[in-house]
Length: 201
Image (cartoon, rainbow, N blue to C red; front, side):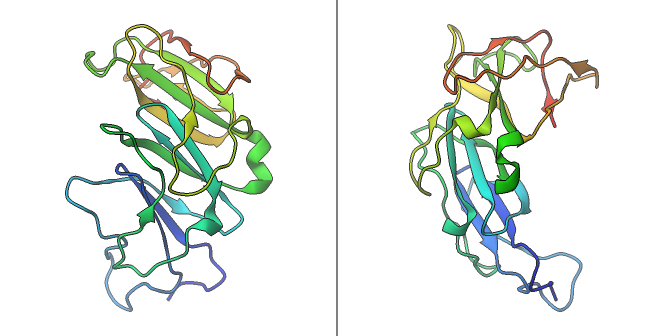
């Protein structure tokens, strides 16, 4: 049985669904169990924990970012399918999500990597690092605000990360890739990557 004082599990999916799972709703037996009912074609893109005071962030492939209070997502039972987290445009999907402590909001950053959807994996693109608090808080289930302006030849975010900085990036061979300094303009374009970025943390 879960600790009643623990923060609920939070999950976000590619279709923009967000869910917080009731603490103590774990089954009495079994090493694994379902925590969200997914629609066909949907998948979990983020899992963590989120107290009511935390901030939830969803980043979509069309460079829309939505930030709202975790308290706007009431905890549900394991069998529930969650609720709308972000209103997505046609063809867009959530590529990253995060839960950030309100106390650390000023230290959190958003890293976005833009490229062409038709490009070969690991080719080109631009990257941008922006303080999270530059993005205004909005209501759950609304559209986001633009997190990065696409350059010519770019049409989607292929990677994004939200968390307490400094952020670090690596390439496909595990090599460290230097990220640019913070850009205070929330909807500015990125700068060309020095090497293809495959993971951020």
